[in-house]
Length: 255
Image 1: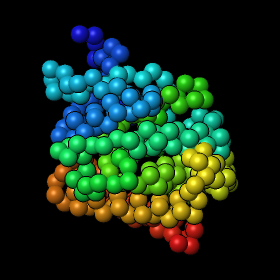
Image 2: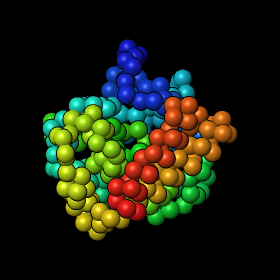
Image 3: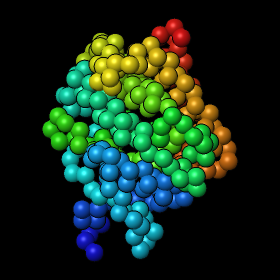
Image 4: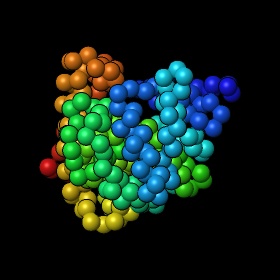
């Protein structure tokens, strides 16, 4: 077997590259994720990795997507411009179009035990710049599908807006390399237009509050039950951070 090369950036799973494959920790949710990924391939969404089964160490095997991932600081120029928000909005819409024809089997389990049993769509659950792969100014991959779950399309779009616009205090934007006084309204409008223009910025902002407060409630409940990785999230201060960010959006946009 080729040498294993650890891949950085994740907080939840042990992830290594082996040749042209990625090996990741698996769990009861893995069959559901692999069914979704297989469907996406057949539906023409080529930006998702191909599922390739389970290896002899019980890890899931996925195809490796070459390119550059996005870090927590110093974003590339394209993502510091409204153009980048438009591009990712279009990519999310492309995913949702492919996912709408997916019919999960009744016996499949998703990673979050508090996720709805059914929904408008199987959302990615963590669709953000940090889970995309780029070649130059174009996204070529969407990775880290562990938190896929039934939900609504607007929840995915609102989650992306929260992270990408970002719907967060100015200091976060400075960490990403956005210019002082960056225009959130332009970035959010570009994101909504990229997605197709059928969801308004106001709807997305309200959706972001709902998504953040749901993440907060789930983290609190699942951490109290001792369920990984929510125990890690809670220990890292996620509950207080979620509360603060939801309150910032409410105050900034007078929700």
